[in-house]
Length: 280
Image 1 (tube, helix red, strand yellow):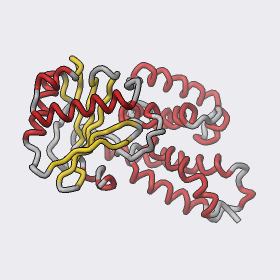
Image 2 (cartoon, helix red, strand yellow; image 1 turned 180 degrees about the vertical axis):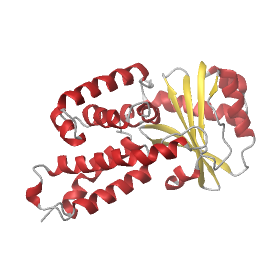
Image 3 (cartoon, helix red, strand yellow; image 1 turned 90 degrees about the horizontal axis):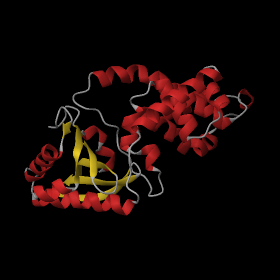
């Protein structure tokens, strides 16, 4: 028979990884994999030379089709849009799954994004990429070259170690909890930026906030107004230690930082409950 359940499940981690990075949404990635399974479960074995390549093609093209409707939703989204965070193992490479990297991918067209991910993250050859996205190999080479240039120019910075990343995140949390503006400002870069994604579901800044003093005031104010039952913990999300904020055990926000190991360069807060429910 076909691409049976066993065969599909064998490739599920790879397929989900492609779909999540293509769409920036864990729930959408789940939907894509369900559709891919339904489309391929009754396909005769002789219809494909490589199960892995064929399934990757189906998932990638479903993602490209999905982008047509996703673009309309993004244009109507209230405030800044950030990817849906996911739990990861400590071995996950932040350079290919961090929120900062996922936001950077938003600057690419859907086809550029597919070509870049397949080539740089998943190590497909130029010929394989061409087959998957249905373009000429020479065209894919050009798309990959363009995407690489854009990513290199804006590539996120990471702390030299997870320990340094965690230490800065802990320092940020402690300073905000105490309402200690001077201590907070010391660990923020002068040109630090803060982006919040509430999706119109909860109160959040509608535009990015820039500058050490403004970001420090923003976060000390948020912490000051937090309910008494608010707790925080550091968890591994999208390849880096991330601050989870809970109210009565429900995750209500997460705070992700980009840092060079010395100061915090940017902060991204996801508070849209639709993007957090799977973390509770």
